[in-house]
Length: 352
Image 1 (cartoon, rainbow, N blue to C red):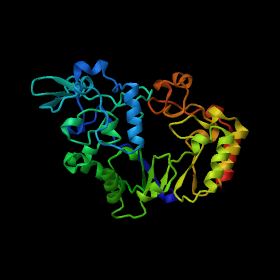
Image 2: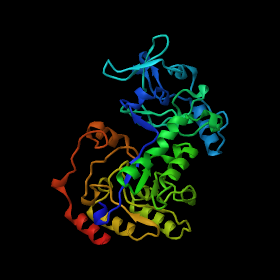
Image 3: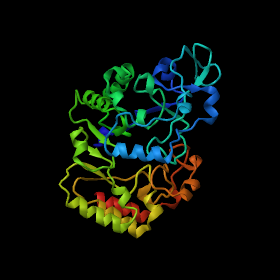
Image 4: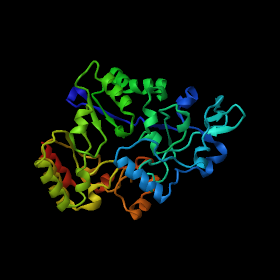
């Protein structure tokens, strides 16, 4: 890629790992574990409407002292420590000192606490803190950290050190040019800062993109070169896109963002618009201050199948695209047979 003038950025999702990761065997204390007998009924914590209102209000006020926690029945599904780990059954299982068999719980969309997305059964959350009172998976342990978890004594230091070195290792071994940090705002800020500092130790130009929809100076202050931004959301309708672009042209914020009508987590632009409108949208997006022209693979010829149904999908669309039809989870081919050459040629001329 470098030989033809292309720089390479890789995406890193540091909050989660595969449920069959060897790290769970080598470092079981880096993970949450639940009793095997609870696995079939395990689900995200359930909060009452009253508690949900309190959670939203406190987070809006940035008050993270004694955040509402899940009930005891949910917390009790998790075990504090293992005595050993085994793999002879075909899956990774933890064993406690009294012989209780445990497994890694699946992950889920953690905020808002009542997010309707189905569980993410192929991955599990990493356990960033060792505080005994927070040995469970919920919004206040994996995204919005209770004030008690700001104490460095609660940091899982060996895990943090491991994560801190991942991007640096990719840069050193593969000459990587940048990193896209999945859900970076949900990482402890001390860890995020350490990741960026180490990667840039020998290359100040190493780029970081934040998966943030907020186009503000905050990202620059945190050391990011660019953010995903929110233009993709406005682009679902022409009128809202025009309104959003007017706001961006008059904005004094200088952070760069992806000038794109869709991402790998949203509906494809061709799901919402016809050829003429798609051409107009890409034209509008090609000339925004601080906008980085960006094409989600396949959208340049009118691909309609989304990569993932993470954001702004209707219930009907989500049902239409189960995991078996989504490229993020299953083997799927781009629809080259029905490629719209008119869109390809238009985008090519714009970018040229």
